[in-house]
Image (tube, rainbow, N blue to C red):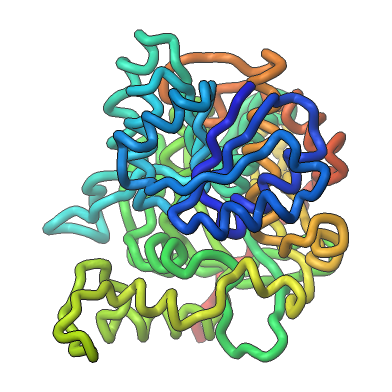
Amino acid sequence: MRVLLVGAGGVGTAVTRIAARRPFFDAMVVADYDLSRAEAAVAALGVDGARFRAERLDASDEEAVVAALRAHECDVLLNATDPRFVLPLFRAARAAGANYLDMAMSLSRPHPERPYEECGVKLGDAQFADADDWEKAGALALVGMGVEPGLSDVFARYAADELFDEIEEIGIRDGANLTVDGYDFAPSFSIWTTIEECLNPPVVYEAERGWFTTEPFSEPEVFDFPEGIGPVECVNVEHEEVLLVPRWVDARRVTFKYGLGNEFIETLKTLHLLGLDRTEPVTVPSAAGPTAVSPRDVVAACLPDPATLGDRMHGKTCAGTWVRGTKDGAPREVYLYHVVDNQWSMAEYGSQAVVWQTAINPVIALELLATGAWSGSGVLGPEAFPAGPFLDLLTEYGSPWGLREQWRAPTPRTTP
């Protein structure tokens, strides 16, 4: 297998550090708009980097991406950029005859009249529109294969196949107790993506209604996370799992809730109130004259790069899937989860916990595709593949997952 990795930020760099320890691929071209970032990612591998090379590449330039795939005879494009570049990279892979894998799907657009009741353009709609073309070509686009979406979807498939006869609800629940020394506000993941998913209308799936939307930060509940993280308030957030899981797994309800914390939520609300979440450029004065800039890009530039925070970060992050249903006629609830301790990921890989937890999953998926344990064509989510080989390999990589029997549902927050 020959891989074109596009994006050498925190997640892309963590991908190289994880993949360097595995023998399943022949070469990986690490490409980024900033050549120095790609070169730094490869240089950090030392002698383990013999199969890697750095290259400058603009992810928005489809012709250049096609040329790179062909020049390096790559079998697969692994997209480690932010969601703005999903479609050009997705299209370039198809044009070059390569398979494709990403960790976030094409962007949504709210319904123009009823944004908090009805879906407009959903996450991934633009990719699924091309599913027939990919299937006819015998090519695979494996979409949403990070941690959330990604591992959380694998957990949903495992629950359906191994743990339940009928599923009432699947709820992705993400929480952490991470702190960052020296910062009052320092997101552990891309603020651009965080703003996008947290301020867009969250999507909920119900079998009787299909997909519909709610207000941002709706349905707060307290969820008790494992391995010492403890109770965290979680709220509805727009996320790909709600759009992916119902396509392959039978469940009456699917939700995604994120443990953000009140301070984080209020900061996001303030950014929205001031218009600083906007992506459309505004004109501002500068020494060189009027300049068009995106307010959201300005916010991102003012905050620290999450990939650089590992040395100041403490605590654990947990990604998981809560499932409620019946087994052998009896009610059952479980929480399947994956916890990463930042101290461990920094000591073992030099990558902070959140980006490392995201990066390990596409590497495992690539290995399963390389060995033939996973195969398919079309535009497919992680749920379309058997979960067992993935979870076995996750443990083999030295990062085991857990399963906790739940004796009570998450606790809704009550307003006095």
